[in-house]
Length: 277
Length: 174
Image (cartoon, rainbow over all chains, first blue to last red; front, side, top):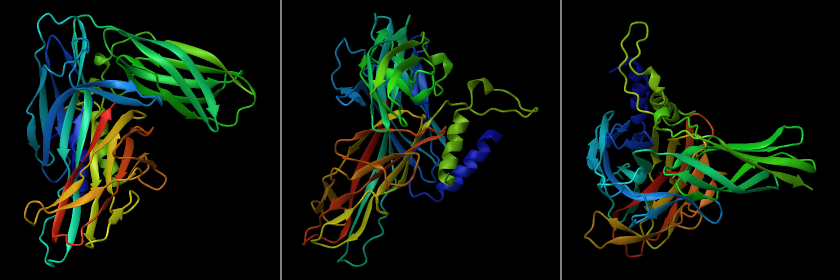
């Protein structure tokens, strides 16, 4: 045990003693498998005082936007050859395990892609299901009593990407538009992925007045697998009538991912004028 | 920040130590911690508990009640996450013969979510049967809280015992 681990583990142990139930820590939250290695791993850590029962599974899905511009996951039960699915040939070992209290366990991911797989990125989702706390069953001394409790189970679904050969990515922005509604700036755009790999980066939108002052802005992680038409909102104060610029920028910078898994791409920007009457 | 959030946050913080730190020595003290990248954790803070109910009378737990189920999620700041539920329609009496069940229902406002703040009052309500898209908070140890309530309807002739079921919450990192 290292000094670096001692403090957090001690605190976690202290916390676990007071918690009725607790999930497992999962890292990383996005898995990238290189075709040359064909394997990767996910680390699970159980900070609880009780063992955690964990099951692992995979499926194919990717983020899309609904009619309200919300980003949701589209699940494809039977992906065809155009779907870039890796769910059928990435396997997790073990698929069932028990993580002891304050212990770590590693999930190995092994890819066995079909022969002659074209270059590019292929996707799947990894499901880590952990059983929550158990309802205490101590018997009912008064036989007239009815007691009710629900056990909660948590499933964390993270992305997996398999990269073969030359992979490249980018995005194209179109149909940028916005409006100020009450105390919010709403921004819509169409973002289409370019290349043969998902665009994983950060989206930054802003509203700038004629003096160059930023009056509203937002920043969020984004993953574009095919096409997104997201709606973003940001708080904005009172705006004087006049001309403003709505600006949107996408970059491949991500604080939460290791630099070596980021596919770099030039920043993409777009802007439109927004008139406040 | 609560002790729980601090503790989990510290682990995530540990996990977030840049990879460049791997294998470095500090003042001659060997450091061999495994750097695992930024992690995510879903913590069940509280099971949904109706407690003791009365036969023939429906009992509800609101998402704002003390008996509501609650999760805390730590993840990537400002990231969006899809929240969905798999909900039971019947609870089973584990102390009676098989077939002894009790209906359970969830309304369009039985669930709530909120960024950063562990307080269901003022949180965004949603239908757990439909799900929603939530968002992590802007802080470094970005947090999202989820609450769920429901209604059980024990029949007048319900057998005594402990009725249990399973609620599954799924969070998709988008």
